[in-house]
Length: 236
Image 1 (cartoon, one colour):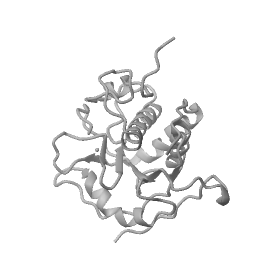
Image 2: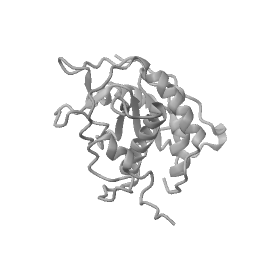
Image 3: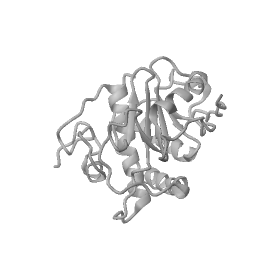
């Protein structure tokens, strides 16, 4: 993963993700209003073909984007294209995973992120073109938290041992959004880029609200306010 080029993503791809998120979230329950925190036998899914010819594959996949069964595979493909271009890495999407045998916390509709990683372990082992440095990023519309539930919910969760991240869109909508789907797509892209930056490039958290790696993110207002680059590019 020697190249570290960063480019602005094309707006048309973001709009496509917005439309696909609308379909993904159609049957999702309305989450509680105010987000407060962010941290980190199954069927084998078919895997999407790489965009490069077989004799031009660049080596092991750097980042696999894996949509869960509630998430659009087309949106995952677009996300892989965007982060691949921005980071100069090989990012590849799979088709949606089969249903994982995970259970919500009692009395809630919230799921433990660690359960997703554990139940998807067999799938990750069977994905082609991976190596020990491949980072697996799961996308879901389910509401997530850690098993410890130290926070009310989490936008994302990461596990460095299995090199896994899960990012949830469940709390990425709010009534004040003028274009709810585009707003959610922008937030999802920021959180995906943060995960890749931290897990694959060793980016550390920043106190600069203009920086993509600003922390702590305590609300959607914070997530909207942070920049989309790291380090932030000064205004000219």
